[in-house]
Image (cartoon, rainbow, N blue to C red):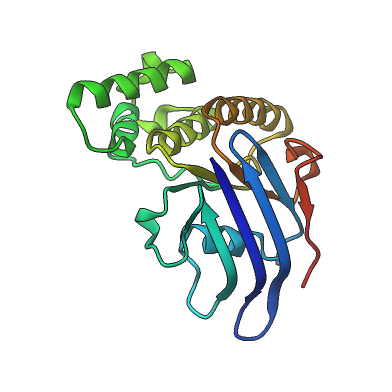
Length: 209
């Protein structure tokens, strides 16, 4: 697995947000793009998953496992994304939130995938709980597992730790990094916090355009 991005320019109607950026992310690698607010980090992720806001233009190429993504709609790109907010469905239990993400197939296999995910999270006893009863850290872990149960071929992390205090951020980083490495998918993390860097050898720093 690999995610390759060649960006010549990413522009808004009034400015150039990013230019001359090349990323080659193999499976199991977490590449960090670090930069201040307004440096184009989230717009880069939007270009990869196909959700660029109107008026923004991406010039370049994006390939996932050798396949170009640019002509594909978001739902066919095979790219998962985790945001700062967990975006769990309040009207569904934890189990139902996870099951919602599992691709169509035989019910026993889908249920088994969810139960294994809950075991990986150490949240099996919370399967039928409402998301509102979980702690912030538990909700963040469920959101990550929901993204992974969708079986993405690449995962994007948009400052997913920024809302938590330092102790919880450290625990969540360890949990997220270990789990995605085990899944051996390419991961692109954007952040403004140097503590989020998974591996200094896989780091790109941005400046204001």
